[in-house]
Image (cartoon, rainbow, N blue to C red; front, side):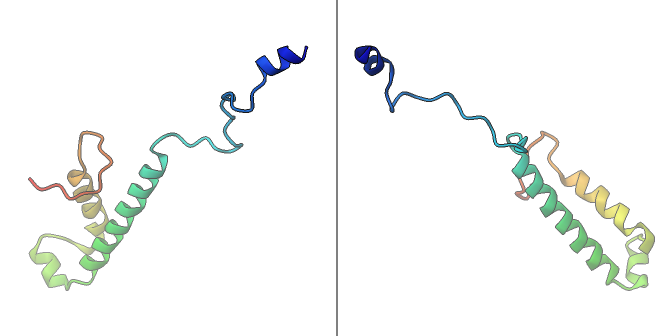
Length: 94
C-alpha cells in the first residue's frame, strides 16, 4: 500500500486548473475595452468643452450650433475609430 501511495502521490504533479473566483466573469480583453471606453469618453468630453469655449461667431463660421456640439463630436469620434475591430488607441493618420 505504501508503494501505491508513493507512486500515485506527488506534490509536484500538476493539479487541475483552479476554478475562477466567484464574480470573475471577465472575458479576455475586457480590461482593454474598459480602458478604451474611458479614454474615448475623456477625449470626447475635452473636445466638447473646447468647442463650447468658442464664441458663437466662430461656431457659426465653422457651421456649428451649440446644441449640435455633442452629436457632432460623437460622430467625428466614430468616424475616426478603426473599422477592423482593433482596440488600439494610437492615432491613425491617412
